[in-house]
Length: 429
Image (cartoon, rainbow, N blue to C red; front, side):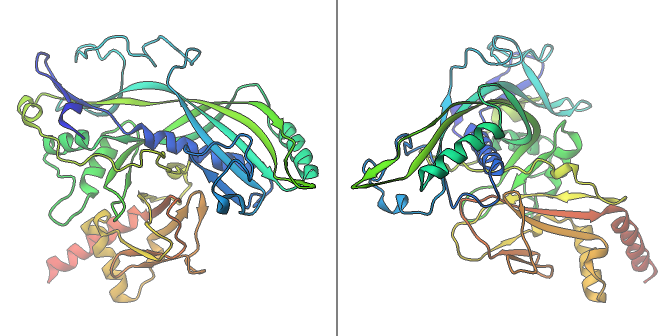
């Protein structure tokens, strides 16, 4: 983030800084959701090739107007999705209201105006708030099949499978990227570093999830990116499918193939457009210098993050809870090792070490799983391996375009009781 991205005003009771999130994350989040939703409308594993890009046009796709020969040779059926971001949404839900539209330019700590709550530390008067936006993205979709018979059958199947030309609401959860400088200001103000001397981020995550109106998720840093924090929130995406059509296929000599089914999906959803940090600590805001690099993005593509819609709604036995659920990515198709020790606090490490030393199964208080997109991976089948001695995950089923998520559930009651027992042992000694 650049210095000019933060605006500071010292004339109100609470000083504040504001920073813009990376909306490319949220657009990519919606893109991944719509892609998976579309795939789910068709028979399982129907599409042999799925391609999402904002750099290639797919209408009237043929061997002759596409120079990427290898691309068209891929197996069919193919699902091709081209996102289009629409900035001016005149017919948007609650257009020209405080909820979705910037009405006033300045914020007043006595009247929050447009701003919505995220983190509220009322006693110390520290707040993180955000300006709501109503965004619109459309997807030009092409389904390419080999024969005209399959084209006709699948077009009518799709027409009857889901409503056409009428809005519907798809409920899911999205993750809004929280600017790193907002997190850095908060961490400095509460004297809890983003990373402590041991490189642990658990303390700041604990504070956020204890004082925030929404859960805060975390993207673990690896060689392809930075540590990133997200506001995890439920979303209802208003979705409309229009323009369903079929083409005549591509004629080559005396044969015709590459038959297309084309349509457009329009999606409207709410997210944060700006984040604000309010505090009584004037000197902190006045002297703060942004310390983080800008978000690493590819200017031609959105960041593909897939969000599981029920991370925090999993039904667990009494005494258990979701301890952590960081997402991560991989750089290549080769196996990749990721250390998750920074996400584990000292107490949990002690309990893990105690069980390993005494040969007690970790399953009595730990339940770990890894998701690739929305699919559960299998450690038994060799798709990943967790080393509880080194606290690392090695991912073998690697795909750089996928989102991975490590979910760790813990029997909190058991851990607390065992820690008390171990502390008593130490006192007796």
